[in-house]
Length: 178
Image (cartoon, rainbow, N blue to C red; front, side, top):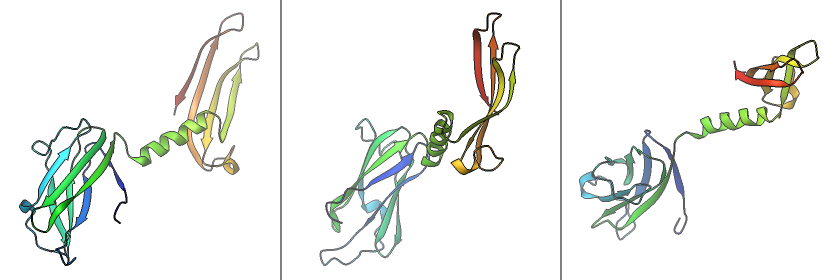
């Protein structure tokens, strides 16, 4: 897809890949190119060329399709450029957005945050002091509204503890994940 911009997502310490195909002037795929025949440049988030310190491996996937792989060591937007002097002089460049966490981890955290701002949120097992101040409770967040208040679809459980002074003013409040 000429002119298309596709960004690859990666994670620090986990191998990232950039795939490309090599054709000759007749648009025929070119298999069996020695990986050392490619020229490559890898730029980290700071725009520094790091291919001498961050190893990039190129393997043929088959039929003239290749994969370049490396392990990023910092977050941000990286760029990989690969060329071959005969079959691929126009080269291939790709952008890799590197994160600290993967999307599964971020999705879990965002789901818990939504629960703690009281989406699909339930409080039970409450205790009160003599002034009717809630001193303890259990908070549970759920995967959907239908399950709220049940034992099904619980994403996380928290214990709440509040301490009040003799005038009924809250002195401390904590919510701890079980």
